[in-house]
Length: 278
Image (cartoon, rainbow, N blue to C red):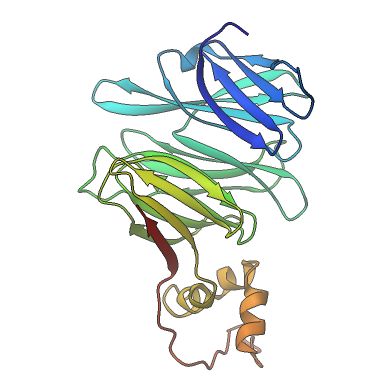
């Protein structure tokens, strides 16, 4: 391989994904002496773009390259979605993306795009199944130039973590795309985000060198959704509800009118657990 590498990351414990200025390769390091294998060519839409991320689904049948570029006064995002089974690429507008698995095991493609007029989160099956939702993504008026830099899924909590350049954090329900909370986690520009499977969260790094670990606070999120968002359906749909039920030993949950009856003391604490390291 003689092409310059613009981006690389571990896509499994033994495999590296490499994005060059022309192509995408996978390098399996289980056997000594192996070479990177060409997967597909980059689309022209990603020319003169900074590659921000590269994602693959659970069985390596779908890949996505994400890049950003300058158009006038705006930072635009473009993506290349590739199917190994069809050997076909599709260009899409978007700043951040990831893959997830539905309850039936289908591959979900999730991405966020911010245009000049609005921003949306899209979640849908790559094969065109029935699971397709979109939700607005709200950016504060104080950050008109902000844009997503990372979108990561938590298999543990069935939520999506959206991180923006200006340090804002958005938490979304994976199934319905509902926004659970928005907080600012960094006063500095965030330039790198990585999943943290051990906690079901993510790590972010800002320009000041601050590393922040973000994950769901299991004891606070369900009371927050029920009492603050008033969304019993969302609370019930989250996979962590069972853990919460065991910890709090709920005795009555749903009345005849399908409303949740909860009698617990006030919960103190943050919806998110943050740990900052320097």
